Length: 176
Image 1 (cartoon, rainbow, N blue to C red):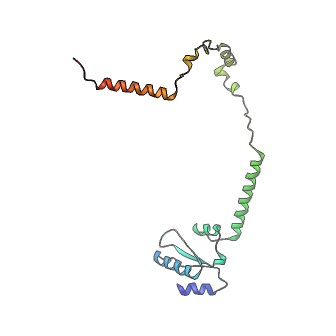
Image 2 (tube, rainbow, N blue to C red; image 1 turned 90 degrees about the vertical axis):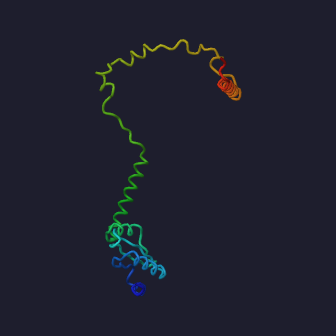
């Protein structure tokens, strides 16, 4: 492994190297060797026996898109990546333009009153509004009945006193 990594470093024409699938221990050793050599390494593949290691020179470290394509088992194609990036930018610009235009005003094609007039009738709401009578007794309650004038402490003390009285009645033995 060390010889392969050393040859990779010496070859200026290579920017990445894909190793054959290997087991977990071998991959771990290879990652350590690559780290000591000052390179970048990533493991790809689904199953433990199909996973392989790719090493990259630091100055040619892979982009996130490149790593994603390797993770999905695809080969990295810079032209496809550029097309995807342009499509993302276009979609983002369209979203921004739509947001700047403001909310879309939706106007219904039919009126619900006409649609349900066979159920509620034409003048049902008007008839109900005419029948509505104001409550004559509202506002005739004396001020003393509307509000508790005690403070919180007074109310709490009264509650505690009632509780003590109830408990003392329960503790008294019945007289016969």
